[in-house]
Every structure is written in C-alpha cells, then in structure tokens.
Length: 194
Image (cartoon, rainbow, N blue to C red; front, side, top):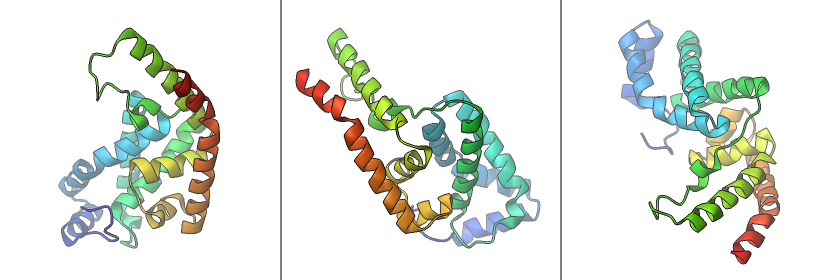
C-alpha cells in the first residue's frame, strides 16, 4: 500500500472488520502486513533491537485489544503508529533512550565493506558526533524527524499519529532541523580536519 494513500483499501477494510469480529487469521494477516513498518518506527525511536522486538509485541497486543475502537477515520498504519509512539513514550520514561544514528545515516559499510582502520576510526568519531547531536533533540523533535525522514510520512499523517496539527509538525520539524544544524557544527569541523 502506498504511503500517500489516506484511507484503507477495500481488502484491508475487510480484514480489519473480520479481525474486529474475532477472526484471529485476519488479525494475523494484519500483523504480517504491518509488523516491519511498526518495528522500524519503534527501533528508530528506542534504538535497541531487543527492546524494539518486545515493544512490537506489546503494540500488537494493545492493537488487538482495542481493535474495536478503530473507526476507519485514518489509515490503519497511522493508528498502529500512534499506539507504537505511545508505547515508546512509556518505555522511554522507564529507561534512557537514544537514536541509533548508524541506522539513520548508515555506517559507511554500505559503500566499502572493508574499511581501513583509519576509516573505521573516522566513522566512529563521525557517528559519535551525530548521535550526540540527535540526542540533544527533545523527544518531540526526534519523533518528527524519524517519522518524516525514516518513515517518509506526510505532515498530516505525522499529525494524526502525534495527535497535533500539521502546523505543529512543521514547526517541530523546522526547530529540529535548525537545532541539528547547530548541533552538527562539531561534525563539520571534524570533516574539514579529516
């Protein structure tokens, strides 16, 4: 299903209705369809693969329990994302969190699978600087960056997930990018020196 599609397809709608009526097979198909997208969001927000797996299961248990409340007013995936974001907030309150920036920006191994020791050192320092810059963002700002640039969602979809207006999303994204640019000044200096 395309990310730009606003509402559920007829087939998806039938699956959701069947699942709402207790059809476990229909819910399993919904799970199989959306688990990777939801996992990706959770992973980028929490930065821990093991924790992301656990939270993914919690999200789908909560989705199953509250499936009857889904009213087809938004995309089903947006509804799942909202549950995932809420659960990530809960997890973040319980422990410190970070965004795994090597997954956001790549490790460099995609381009050169056998980097030299000097390249590995430079990559490590680059990642530390980027990670520190992202960690300086507030949770609200990090969320919009992840949803916009990693999940490629529209402002309206992000607004639905975060339960705010598209204007608020735009404002947060603007603040996040401004702050990231400022926070990444050490990286610019580092890159010029290396």
